[in-house]
Length: 326
Image (cartoon, rainbow, N blue to C red; front, side):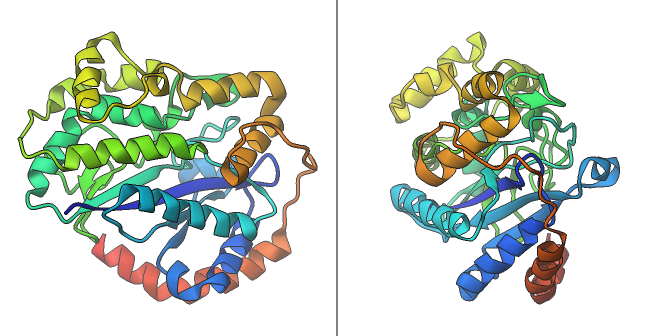
């Protein structure tokens, strides 16, 4: 039986930008359940010249592996509740911060699949449907406060990219993960809507259970990738959409009106902090509506340093091992 797991990355803003206080929240999360979150949480930092716009990146939580994707989604809900319980900042599930231009500072949701007899077939079959799969949660409409399209992160992030000949090269849209030995779907943006995530998981499960070997269509995917990142659903993928719907009858409105569309409209209506508060409200409570927040920016330097010592330092052996195997 295929077995599935999720890694979810989100920004935590105070309220407009992430700060080192994110380490404080991670330290509290680790203290809440050390045995689990020692290996099921992580942090990200900006790199290179992107550091000028802010050092802190997103934080990561991950689930246990599960053959039941509905139970897996429930597990992600529990991890979200744990993160929410230790976080006073705004939890912002989005591929790229709306007012940034930082291709090294992005967030994603990764799906891991193992337990299949033929990983090569699974890998190829997922690529076959890749022009559609990313659209379930696509959610990164802005760069430097200007509209980009459906996903700036998918188009520009340093951590993903077109499919290469070697499936073990880490920074592409789907890979064979060296450390875990899983087929890892990396293309998807994070989003607040658990309903969208559940349909994505159902689609991935249906593909993973196929007995036939489909033509991957790598050249086709790589050729249309930029247009997908800009425009989302393309006319030339209509047949592929119907093929996927024959496996799992998902609602077409998921692709016709994306999470990115909803976020762009919210941002135009209520501005940056209002949009972030709506994302936070959706993440915590399942309601994509703005809520009242204190708009004063808080650096949280002291708590950030305390959190760094309480979270980063104890996990140094794990970071060293992870770096070696990846």
